[in-house]
Image (cartoon, rainbow, N blue to C red; front, side, top):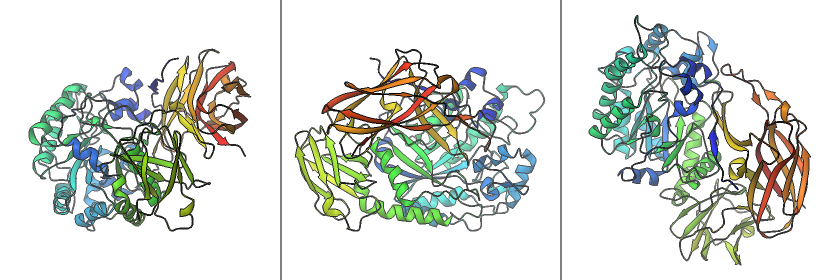
Length: 615
């Protein structure tokens, strides 16, 4: 049987217009979609870079998106533009001169650098990275290379980045810059310029923009603000590799300890930045990595976006990222006046209180020995200890883990050290939380398990424990004559979503197989989430495990329109069907197989299968 392969599906969504307008983008590049926008998903990581040590230990950083767009807050000329707040110049098609003129209204008198840094510190974050220049070309710092800066074009006149750099140094927080190296909507030779190009312009004139603005400004950022922990580049597009190489050389010469993310392009970077808002359910095989997320849906402040993440959800997403071996950078979007919305302050403060009690399970922690999480939560590890983060309290008060190559010597709740009962039955460890019912608990209770040696797992198959629901995602399968593909799309305010599907069923010999580690035999109620086009309607499918099987018919799932942000193709809906009860009779390794019985068309995509103990 073939091993799993994941191909990146081109993103035919909100950025179709952006991709078509890139001056340096050829037809082949357009087909690569967001791979080009976000840079490489694998880079030749320099494992010897001294700063990777703090990067993998710190785990948690604050991202800040702030600029003229924050003052607009999603409104231009009295009209609200829904989408990514910092893209309002693009969405509203604001003329370059009008956008530049708006700088005369930017006067963030309530900006308090020290308070912003202290909030990050209270939240448990170790680094701050801020948009020194976003795609609109406006610099939040003093620059000799441009007049479109906070010190020259606004009534505020002061260097915002200097204030923040000084506050970070005072509070012991690492400091870094976001810098848009390719896109510059207000520079005639910059990427995706929004005005009329100068007479005689050719794409090679990008060289003028790069050498006269990018190189001088990056040099200023690396020389005028003290020690810079990271410079975070973005959307390289098809910018030729020589420009990325020049930036690497510049950073290495001026601040050799400064890290560079993979979105610099050209295959460079000291670590990988995954796609926006991507919390991977399965450990990505990309080396050192991070994911960037935000406290609501948009990156910069927008008046309409009130979908604030709760303190518990922030903690859960942090745990999930660390459990998969990554680092988490969480964005805040200050208002135009420099203040951070109250719900963000409250959520970061509360989540920081949880982290202050349970930071042992996060800072310096390693990934879970299991490649995937559990229905009840997730796991981080450190030395001979496992930390079980319980997002959802198990109905029967029991957590089961199997095939751990070590013996437990102690179990307790991390926040108060109270003892937790446990027993090991053969290869299965049972942690009993029944005695903790009714006690006051933190946002996420953490069970600390101490073992007599380093913990390894001998079986990475999905555990079916007879107690909790098991979720089998597409990317957990192995496939034959079909494919695992990623789908990315934007929703209401420009937030990115990521799903994987088993699709492209080429013949009735195709199949997808999930490996199960069955701890408790018995009957399980099976449901499936899928999308199906008209061509795949009335296809017949067989889901089997051992000698037991369920046959079902797929139905057309329909389409959702894609008109809320920018024009794009309709997106296929998902359909959830309960298939019936499957009797799994064998304890130990089993294989759940999905295969067509009568294939009407290739347009059938399986997102997940769930197995729930049937009582």
